Image (cartoon, rainbow, N blue to C red; front, side):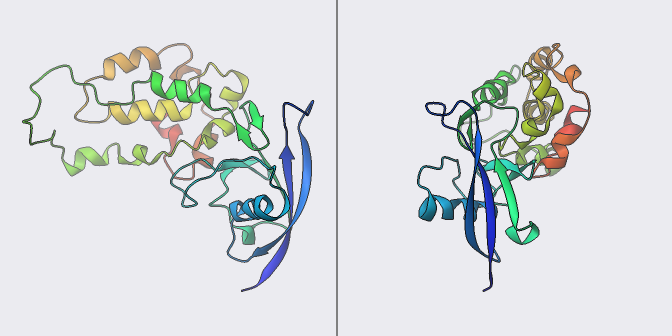
Length: 227
């Protein structure tokens, strides 16, 4: 298998030592089938053990390895080196406070996701028997299945200009999540969620740029959910 030399330019920032972020370059010998996450792991294992970043599954499932690659929010486990130039800049996701190096603080978005009550709410009707579940047709599932693909990578928030201007905006992932449950035939909590979604910082604050859907690695299409 062929190899190539990748010049990786990585943003570094330690709040206990640095006044502001800075960039460090690493020369990484990469296999042709590597993704950016493989290159970062090589740096961590062989060149610089102090580099901080998040990752888990390496399979586009956990959503934890989202970073800015060449200025665009992307999953590093999905971005193949063969599709990139010989020099690549990697930065933490935009619009979030930096905790250290490539790690950002996600507390704000986590609170927003909880705010939309992302679970099935039942107000009326009898529960199913103990040995049964609420039944749902394939057609009813199809109405919201695409929205269940979100892996909370937060790339959409890094791409969202409105969230970048005003982080009070509830944002694309939270709005998509709310819409997912509003479309669920088993749910009866739509009216409670609409009070949150119709707030000034809710759906009406969206500027409809559509960048969230452009960068979504799972094709959830948050912009369509918001529309």
